Length: 339
Image 1 (cartoon, rainbow, N blue to C red):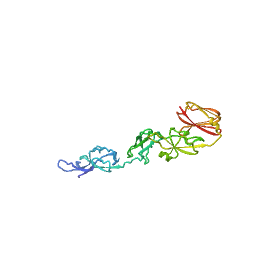
Image 2: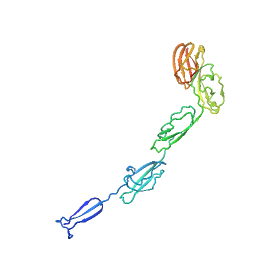
Image 3: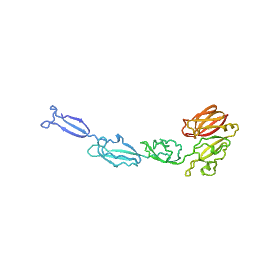
Image 4: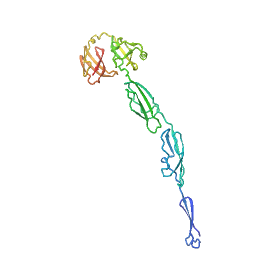
């Protein structure tokens, strides 16, 4: 009896092999047999992009060349042969013949670029306080600035560099520094009756004074330094060097109308300029002394009960300061220069 043995090695190609005796007969007793071998040839799928068939790029970005050899060693060609960095599309890899490999399709997605929506122009006056540059744009782009801090003394450009993988483009901020400083002064300031514009503490001291903001902007109706101060009134100072003008700076004054502080006219203070110790004396006991910088920040606040006191100012930086003395519940102000 003829027996057939099927050994399924693989599928696709089939081979039949017959074994017979010398006379060509198949005999069971002789263990002669015939059998069929089958062979399957597997096809291989090219692997690209770590096994993913989708990849994303930012619009306009630099895109590498498509590799002609897959990650698992299949060679072939692409159609189209290069990726368009402006339009999404499909790219087909066709293996070379003789590799028993299938075609592979790569989907390329092009993402539109985002522009950080920072302001691109800034005008300041020399010495102005400038807020720090934000590391996140209003539309959510994260990045860094080069340089990282605005220099408030010179005009320049500052570039925002987005962090990777945001499809965001850099932008440039142009900072225009007007080479003149805005005036600086505490406000309000308190004065005795009869005080004039010249008594207002302000830096620089040679500013121009105006009655209204509009007058200051238009540079009309300048005020005389001998003009008596009015109570609860705001005056506007402008720093003007003949070529550039600052923004108008408001200073409000309070004029105290009293007759009980006549003895304060005997007020004495020395030395001025002062380097370490300021001596202050008056006819009535001094109750308190306060010292302010021109930003209106109180730096010294001391209580006393003496007609002559010594105030240690050695820790103050060199600058112009406003000293406020209180005696007999009356107030007097004067300026000192710290060396």
